[in-house]
Image (cartoon, rainbow over all chains, first blue to last red; front, side):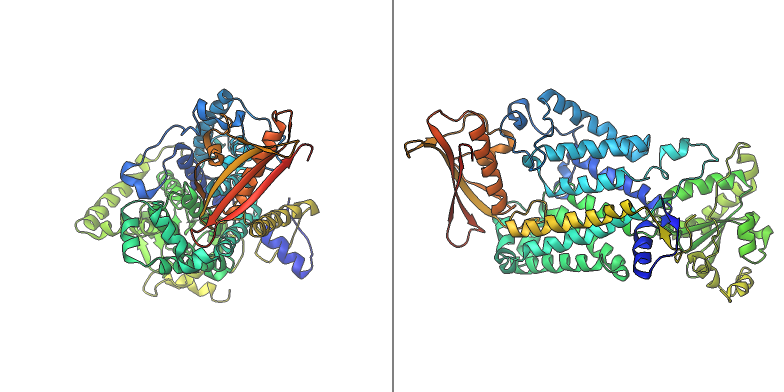
Length: 448
Length: 144
């Protein structure tokens, strides 16, 4: 789709913003987390406020036969009166199909067909009737349509796992990710604009939420007792305004993600809002940079066992914090100074963004800190005797790794060097501690 | 691999319709939502608390009206339009008006009495339980 061309400044910026080719791994993360949000919605397993009593149905049925509205007054969405209205039996069948489709979508199997099909089916449900309207359903529809029609199955998917080992993942363009990036601040800013009324400015609306028992759960009771309605109201307006601005300004994205995460978890702790909070948090993934991060892993591309370990580790690197450099790769070798190969072959090396060089067990410990799934376990690796045992286990595995390796181990591509002096891993290399034997190699980067 | 950040890219002009249309859609829907006081489609989560009651009547050709109580056509989520009881919503007044208008259209399309020339809904609502109650009459006339 995208081809290089000379262009004027503004149109060049426009094209670059929307249509720059980029890896599709962020879209894959969006697929997984947004798919989970949808699964929680269609099974009814939402609401932290009722966590001890949370239940899931497969699926949660919208209506019983006696309460099925589509064969009576169903108030079609204006402009979509032409949509065929299903009988109750067909409606139930479509509801049943939604769950397996969603599971396939999350797993990334047949994603090219499942993604669009799931998006269209959910869109169809949404557009059938005004009676089906909920803000969280609309949010899920928008996200599903954008993600479902993108190349979200190229990474972290069964499709990618089952593809030929030689098949290179196809790059995507920035468009789907950018659409979601633009969409998030629009949602927040309109939400604030809608709330600029007497009820919110005086705190009366929050009071009504309380007295009509719409705030629920133990946290809500405590919050309503401790914090005046007016303060809660002002806090909500200020937070939404901040989020609208933060997600529109690149330098404030990270602050927006932290504030927004606390905000939505807070909402989900006190209010029944379906999967709204989860879907919104999933959309924050669109703000992750698709390029690799500043933590460097130097691995041996000729060692089958190492490749297998790295393959698993890369699956855990959801937020692309790590640049995986195969030190046997010719392009990498040309880009960096000669390395102490014997030391690198003996143990895996991780270089943290601060320039700390970690080996073996300590290298894995450094990776534990950057992977979301292992982050909480990371402090445990400092408690004695874990470091001592870890070193022993690592040494033993490293000693026998050639026996553990399968002869059919597939080669995995490391990070490919594209000649950009601004690649994050080069900054890390420059920050390597002077005491490290890798430190001398920084000399070559000083002219970049 | 993607080209360096400063590489210009060119796409078919039709592709530009996607971001332009996407942004226009959500901005127009948001502004319409504010203008119509209907929180739906405009991200007005918990905009206003509106308590409302609604009653219905057929408008006869002789100018009189006859009260109407729905049979079983208001089922499931459509029960929010049942007369004789109070309902509430946070989608604001525009959404209630839209639902009631939809119901009056339905009634005129699905077998009005021969002597009726229209269907009338009277909506009484109060916003955030403050201030006076408002009364709105929504009518659907035969052929209108």
